[in-house]
Amino acid sequence: MAAKTTVQSFGKLEGRTVNKFTITQGAGIQVSVINYGATVTSIIVPDKTGSPADVVLGFDTLEGYIRSGKHYFGAICGRYANRIANAAFGINGNEYHLSNNDGISCLHGGFKGFDKKYWDAEVLPEENGVRFSYRSLDDEEGFPGNVDISVTYIVAGNELHIKYAATTDKATPINITSHCYFNLSGGYENTILNHQLQLNAGNILEVDEKLIPTGNMKEVRNTTMDFTEVRKIGVSDDLSGEYDNSWVLKNSSGKLEKAVSLIHSETGIKMTVFTTQPSIHFYSGHFLDGNFMDTKKGKVYGKYAGLCLEAQHFPDSPNHPGFPNTILKPGEVYAEKTVYKFSNENIR
Ligand code: BGC
Image (cartoon, rainbow, N blue to C red):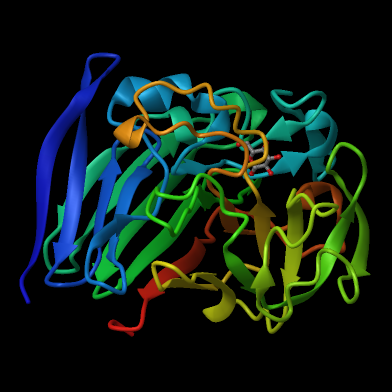
């Protein structure tokens, strides 16, 4: 079936036009993305009856995205997704101090991370996708080096492929992720507590009260963090469903491996996530406060309205020599990939 991408104006950012690109492929999923934050604004998936369900939270206007900035709806997070302790790190004896936008830590790249930037876009008709590019300048939010980043969204049948690439002219930490809030009910259920989740991980990273890794790993077996077998997220009254942790993926080899299954029984929609990255940060959307304008269909996005499954490197890796490396050097190419695959009883 024919592939096509349509382009529509979605507002203006500092004098530049923000477009919405809608990528369709035959009877498969339909994905929309915008220049602001290289954000995913919708993923429309047929449910088990064939009706379209939009499975990510978002807004009808650019203003809606700008005003909800600290929640990163659908956006690309970087230069370093997740937290860097004390907003500081060192490379080769040089100390770097970053913006501390999360208490004393740096979260998702600082006050104005990749999520709040204008990204140039190029439609890729052959590949059925859109490539966004952005140049992050030396010292942006305190990070060293000029970094050229691209994020490519490709729709292949019922799969959304996200490819990340970056190069630098000075050694710098890089960790890029997508911060979509998923709700596979397509917006008719107010929370994700009924969703069933399976994570291909036997350990989480132990963290302190500021959500900074201690350097230790903890086994999930027999704890509320155990999603080795598929199970409901909110299971009982004493387990609220609040999660903001990084699961260490098994078989993490840098190759594309299965990491997550998420299922919503009523719509029959299943999402399977594959990634080259070593961890999944599962955030259950418990900081959403219902205070958002221009939400899709005027929905109230309150606590647990959507959940994020952020494929990424470990938080605070630049301060943990024992964690997988996140320092990109001149001459090297950062390359990661995550695939979100959708299926149901009728489409597999
Ligand atoms: C973080 C949460 C944070 C949220 C902001 C998540 O990725 O882990 O702690 O509050 O992003 O929307």
